Length: 69
Ligand SMILES: [Zn+2]
Image (cartoon, rainbow, N blue to C red; front, side):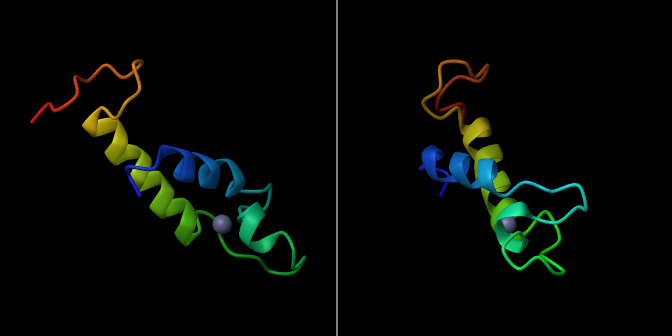
């Protein structure tokens, strides 16, 4: 997923904690006890974003050079 920034960017934008610390995307619909944040998707997306940041990705704003290995 690290190669698909659009995917995890959208996931991170949707899977955010509400004021009760639950994922708004996973538990918002039920109205009851939702999924605690970070949910699985938020964790995966967060890790993917961190990986992309380490690898430099295609963003010019990153301070790291591409192919730093
Ligand atoms: Zn979620």
